[in-house]
Length: 627
Image (cartoon, rainbow, N blue to C red):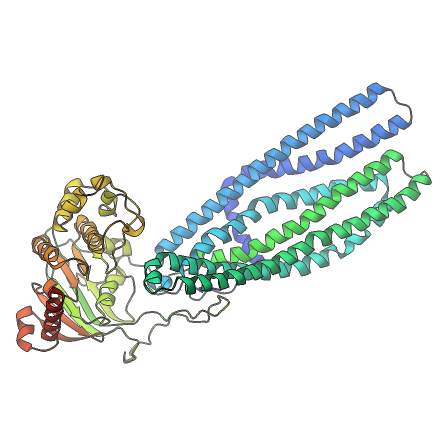
């Protein structure tokens, strides 16, 4: 398993496909009509040899030509009706399988959208993509084609055997004697198919992950001249995937011939024993011919049974992987809050109004990472909450016993070296993670008691890495707004100093951005993300090093506009640049997850310690860059 979810039991593969049953319910009439078409088509297929038997026997007994012509006409009509029914069953059942695949994909995506950052930290993107594509394709093949062929096998074989018994019970018993070994063969090979297909899917996940990482990190790969090394790694994974596929193909190659061999033995017996019965007059020539056709009709379902078994075993392996996503639960953050926030400062409809934000003895560490083995399996690395009262002295702790309060409308700045815990602190406020100890309160209410949707509606968040979507510039800035407000968007773009940038785009606000905003510079992406946050008119603004890629001149202009824009709002600004935070009402200096200094810019400068050192270091770097 490539990314286990917390507390998820291992389910037997045979139970996995049962979870598909509710997905059939919306399409029950299409399924009923499709399966009925399968049964009737199988019945008509068994009628044609019967008509042929009568025709042959009547010709031998000297029947007139009109009788033979009538039989031929009935056979033609039966064949046409059978063809129409087979087209109908394929259209209906394959269509249902496509719809079930779509419904599953929607449900998985909906589930993924509510999972917390702790959960995502333990999964590989390529593995998730593989389950949303390759595994769902295998499930679809079982949901439609495999069900169709299974029903066709059962009823086609049943009707054929009934007609064979009608011709000669003795010949039927002898011809079917080799089939006794079929159940044993199916059970043994089916289990092997399941295991080998599971290995194939695991290797495909690793291959997809490697491809995704290389495509998204192509600049780093080229910058470090690792093209050949990465190509070699990908080729190694490709060879491993090929080996797993070849092992599966070898098994598949044995299954159908194995079933066909058993059926072929039945055919050989029919020729010998059936010929003897014909000579003895116990069956007619027409019966002998029809029996051979029925045996052939029985042979195809037996061969199809091997293929169907293969599909079901593949689907069981894939559905197990799919259910790991469908049944996934947040590892740390659970949306169970029911408390409502009080009316914000300035009134419920006020365009500006802040919230009081408080941290009380907060300690936090990230979830333990999943340890992947060579075959893509994950060792047990379940997320563990810290026992109550434990002292967060472990080096893995990111934040340690933090306490501070920001009044409504106040601005708090957080500075510190890389890895001091600035981003982790901000991540706790939207509940991307929950602290193991302590509380985060908004207007005096523990944010875990608030519905996550209500909490995040109060926030405007600009992450350290600006993520843009492959939509228009206007759609990116208006992302998250229930109704796009042109005035808000224009105001936000002005604060973020984006107007000239947008005017320079081919279609202005209607210019479609590339993947992750690749056709914008780093600074332009950050300013777009800032405009997106401000367009929400949030009561609490979170800026995580939001101007790190912006040049100093543009940064100064943005900060000037932000002073006005943030008036009345509560703001937390994390930055490694002292210039971005010097006007804050209060400044925290973090070191190794602890508050080591706090105060205003002037107070901290008078202390002449960490904050002053950070400022002097930055001034030195700026001087070097200017030189």
